[in-house]
Amino acid sequence: MTQQQTQGTLFKNGRIGLGASEGSPDAIYTENGRIRAIGTSAELALQLSGRSCEVVDWAGANVLPGLTDSHMHLSMQGVKLAALDFSETASKEQMLWQIRERAAKTPEGEWIFGLNWNENAFTPAEAPTIDELDEAAGSRPLYLTRTCFHAFLANREAFRRAGVTADTPDPLSGALGRGESGELDGWLYEEASKLLTAVQPKPDYADKKAAIRRACESALSLGLTAAHTEDLRYLGGIDVMRRIHHELREEGLHFRSHHLIFHDYLDEAEALGLTAGDGDEWLRIGAAKIFSDGAIGGRTALLNAPYHDAPTTSGMAIHARERLHAITARARSLGFPIAVHAIGDGAADLTLGAMEAYPLAGITALPDRFIHAQVLDAALLERMTKLQLIADIQPRFVVSDFPWVLDRVGPQRTDYLYAWKKMIDAGIVCAGGSDAPIEPLNPLLGLHAAVARRRPDRAEPAEGYLPQERLSLQQALWLFTEGSALAAAEAGERGRIQVGFAADFTVLDRDIAAGEQALTEARALMTVVNGKVAYRA
Image (cartoon, rainbow, N blue to C red; front, side):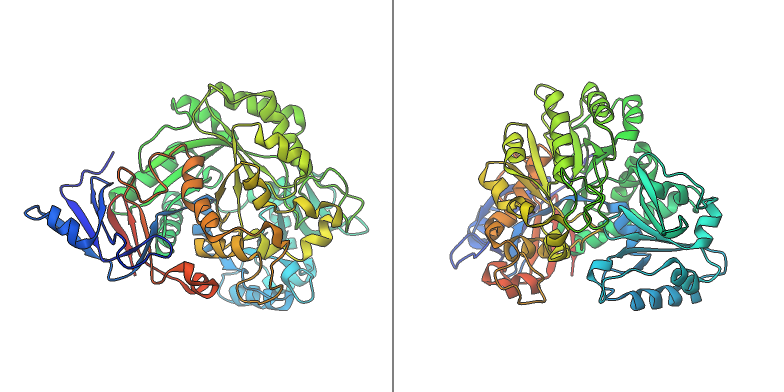
């Protein structure tokens, strides 16, 4: 239900837009969630004289269109905020120390969960062995999710709980890691993880709602006004998802969400009579989510030719071509575009093939989504330009994956590696996201990665990795504003500070156009959603 607002709000004394100059409009009047007028504070005060309205003084803060994360996972971000987090862990020894510390606080027999370890960022670049995990966790089952969410580590107690032994066969769309003699080595890849998640304690409704609340509140504190998210595998159903967001809104949490529907839940969508685009200004139903491959870090991203640093493998297809086509046909029959996770060029070929075989035209106003698009070539890029799709890109992947990704894929693939600028120059609409909790949720870090293509805390390489793909700040900001709006078929509603558009604003403590340091040090002072102050520092 749309919230009714009884009076308008005058926001004044702001610096509106990138590089706002003296004399530019500094005030916005909103009413019923929409921008009704833009001008100077004096002009709008005169126009509104005699009318009752709330006044919010921005006190010289910098105001941008409300930022939207086009691809993340609210549920798992909420889980991450409460779990053992290895995002800043620098070595295997530090990781094991964190596990021991958590084990000391965890009753014997209870599970320990952790997220976001990345052995490629460790010094030296190695992950703990299963023996080391056993020692650190003791009698407690341990389950750790790699930063890519496509590879996992577990100790022997976790495998014992699940009844998984060296004789357990690999599932069709996954694999168990094994040593030279065939014994379990602690690793799980892709859907082999389901063998362990099946025996883990399940979150109840209160746990699920608390995770979504934590994530939304965190997003608002970072200046995000909305997120495109996929949460059904954690929440367990569309009805549960809608109930949680409705209750949080009724409880005063103002945050917009656009929901991808994991393809296993298309039957529930059909039963509920839902299709893409349904919902209101707070919650809308989006595309059907499908995975076509894994991730480069664990070498499960599907490449057309073997990995440069592992010539015996080309990665893994999550679905055979026929199955991917069948899921696409099912989605089309229910009025859904598809949103396909495709990282490797082999997965890109499969994904584009499904989109080409089942054209979207005439089915829905929402575009298909090509998610990640990290390894491409000229022919794939040309095929993308001919389809009704947007590229859902995550600029922060450049920070996490370079330089080690260069050795993974080899020099023959670097021309179209994380090729954001080539896509934009080719006319492909791109939207910007974080893929949180895999990457930090802070959108300003995404903007920095898009323009600098290197870590914000390091000066090298000064020109960034593959600098020909650097974006301008205006292009980067567009990804998280108008690009995200186009991905949700909301181009006439969101993404700009313009009369008639939604009154969504990200208010920062400095002008990010002032230079790289300003971009990395800026903080959100206020987040306005639908004309309401949803967060104030």
